[in-house]
Length: 334
Image 1: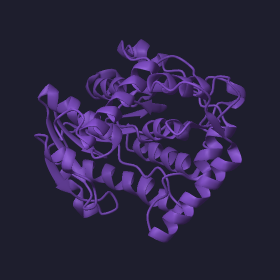
Image 2: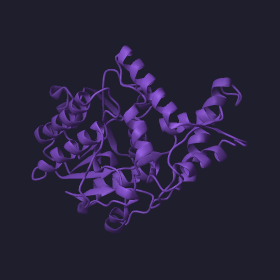
Image 3: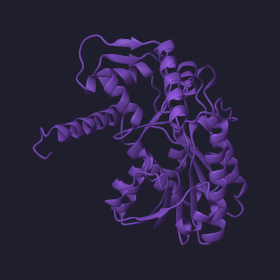
């Protein structure tokens, strides 16, 4: 296929680029002038510089595409206005560019979020028929983006995918958690009960490609999960085991997490950039469960997740360890 990817310089986007290149697909990546493009420059892909908030820059990226994978999104921001501009306005501009410049488009795959669906009330597992109830500015902006895509459904063959928390090599939060645990610190989240659904990044990429190619997915919205429910304590314990950490770990209490998020927000405002951690993110993990049923995607498309949560953590931890050895020269190559 001839595929265009927004968000190609991000975590999931980078994995998708590599998977499509391995298949022999022709890949175009829309990148902002400020994007870190060095990993993409080593791949046989075309880079088109543009910005979702600049409509004039988008037709060149999508012209002639068979499939557009829309992954780019603003995940953290100081206020709702920024989410509206990036996630709603940007999606609107991209949809209009596809309608104008890609008349032969076979599929528009919009990578949304469980944040658009909202948390699970009383720990109940949600499916695609449940009414969305987002509780964050980010979630509301992603739901608004979904509605824009659906509204163009008579002219745009679109599929919406809502991934849960995505684990695997390069996942920033997982790598940060592993680094924190090496200092024998671990965020305290939840009460030990099931709190989140997960998916491995490579499984998600397979699902995105399947959604792009399968005729049944047009006009459909899907959760994609590994079929299990996890407590955050289980995830934390697995990270500890995979990094080989033995002995006690000091839990980072909820008020301390909020304080750290406030510091992150303050530093971001002073530096004129999005915060890496916000109080909204901390509250979402502490107050809510995020549990979803991915069986519809499995039934309708024959999809089967191949990776377990431990596989995802092991690969992520291994990638960080190899990166550290290269930096210190311990593997003889640095």
